[in-house]
Image (tube, rainbow, N blue to C red; front, side):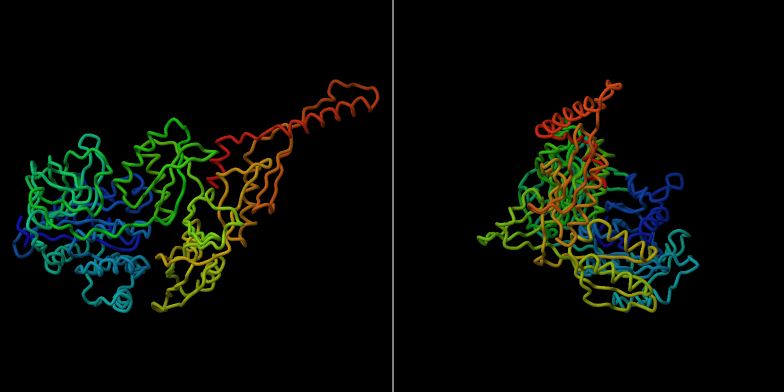
Length: 596
């Protein structure tokens, strides 16, 4: 199809504002899918996405729409995730589009992630079409949502389309607006083929399937193309698009979005943001995406050590589908061989672990999540530490800096006090508050990334009864009084349980870990001490009491000294046993503690 009749657009919104439901409606209205194939959340193909009601992967789909002017247009849609941990998916999708549908829930208004996604779209100079969704809800407030559009996002409120994806209201107006307001793609003017790689996945029969957007030239089977980043030349076997299932096409022309398969067998050969070009007359590379830096690290180990190679292969396939995830091999005394993995956030970590379990049938165990600390030694060298095991001895450390994030929290007015106390409990400092409208405020604060890892998001939701939302961005490092908390079992340090914490919080965390370990470590013939220590100082202790064999059972009657003699003998034996004995902590105990 000629470029003038093509429109590439993406759907952006805060989590749960109705992106996927709207995409289902657009697919149905354009006749891309029949009534028989129709199901809720059609583009969310993963079980995990359907269960949690969130989008994890961006999904491309091609639709054909006959507009009111009688012309037929090819609409290429990319449905994107809304959660802060998947903003990399959003930025990659936007780079393949000329416009974006911005969806705002009429009942909830502009949320933290809406603001972040609009900034991403504006950075790419995309045409933004605001859509106020869920107008059929009894507590929808359209005038206020229009006002927020103008005040918070500087988008004219009267340009917004009123819609309800669930009821099918406003779908035709949206399709007409896409045709009228989003510009058609223009050729980049390069000497030959130029196509951007914006996603990929692994297929057992076809190898690596690469999602591309053509900026110049034509892609057709049999062509020899070059991947500029890896320098590899490949022959294209098949080209096609999605509706939502992949279907084969003769060629992909300027402005079209689709997929290619070539003789690429290894996931490492395809890099996100790479450019495909002609081997004989190479074009310059397209601007790719910024390198993504993981924020949260966790060790992933196979429960059965024989599965190590299997896990390694599956991590490579998963990384191809989710390039924001990184990993490298590491070993642990307690858990054997495994991988140190980097994630964008805690939901990302949870999703990756769940995908490994479900899609690849892996039995895995993950260690306590940590962040990257910057350690300056007394001789002036700076070392980055993401694993407590590699933290140098305290006498060699000059200072430790921890990563800081700028957190934007939007909450109802009545919850300001609770939110402020939560921020100070998490060692954050409030920078300023901004009133968004008569009901809500936005709190901007600086907080240690370490503190928002575990339960910050959940706490916001429970304090605000689900009306709060948050977004964060990296804001550098600051010096903090961080210490390494070691867990000692019978005097020996167990590296899997050690972690880096702030000195003020070390005692509470030590007590909690010691209490948990007491529950899961099986009793021995002698008493076992479980201690939490910072350096040489023990700050918390629990004792697993000994199993006692009744050695006086064979004494019936006679003098008390006979019984005492047997008990003294047992006491001596226990003392000797304790001197030689080392406690064998079962795998289940590690799993229980790390789950907690």
